[in-house]
Amino acid sequence: MSRQAVAVIDADGALVQDGHAGAVPWWSFTKTLLAIAALRLAEDGALSLDAPLAGADYTLAQLLRHEAGLPDYGGLASYQADVAAQRAPWPAARLLAETEADRLRYAPGQGWAYSNIGYMKVAALVAQAAGLSLGDALDRLVFAPASVAGTRLALLPSDLDDVAMGSVTSYHPGWVYHGLATGPVADAARLLRALVDGRLLRPESFARMLQGRALPEHGSATYPDPAYGLGLMLWAHDPLAHPWGHTGGGPGSGIAVYALGRKICAFWRTTQPDAPVDVAAQAFARLAEALPAAAKPLE
Image (cartoon, rainbow, N blue to C red; front, top):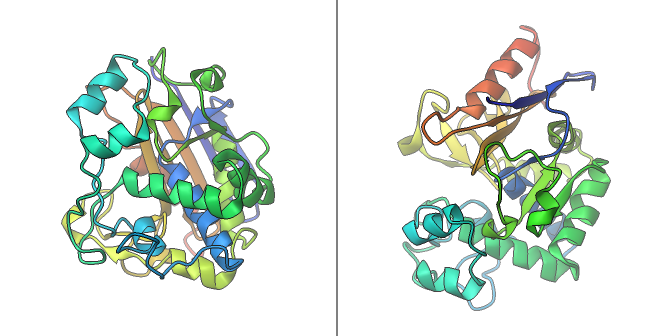
């Protein structure tokens, strides 16, 4: 039997939630958190968005926008097999070797390909620049200023004991190499609302997040005009007039956390391999229901 959770914050900040109220895996919504942390560190001068990284031909901004030329590991058969067999995560060196990560697939900035390995590097840069573990860095840079006390980074299987994982009975969060944030969907909605309200980034940093690479080749019924910004999925044209945020999925469930104007929706649902759920479409539908006809996008 499927389970779901939804949290909607209206323009006035009122929260309405339904379904599972406990913690769920945030999957790739964690990329948005990493982007916020990286941008906050850039604001402080601890990181540079546009300077080539040491020993690399790409920049932090290109990593955040999936433009660095790095491969992904999600479709690797040996990776999928070991996750399904509930084996321990590979050492990072093996992951990089298995994916031939030192061989860029295109010149940085000259192409686009979704890359979890790119965000693995972002996570390492955030932790190094903050001088903290990744979990502590996210606590200081993202979770605390957003006032989401129920959120944490899962490091060990035991960290998922109180997290709803759908049909998955055993999972090691280390398989998510950029880190796996967990928390209630209400906290995911609150976090994105904090970004909307300017409590996490300066206006120029938020504007930089919204500078997306248009991806017409990935258009679909749900995303007719897709683009990818700095840790954000959005519309290529007039992004603030359309939903923006991030979708994520992993074994057993999917999550979508999006804003439209000042309205926020976080939607999570359990999934089965033979019955996928378009969680983004579900979130978009709830945003449309919540948005008055006369409402204007965030300015």
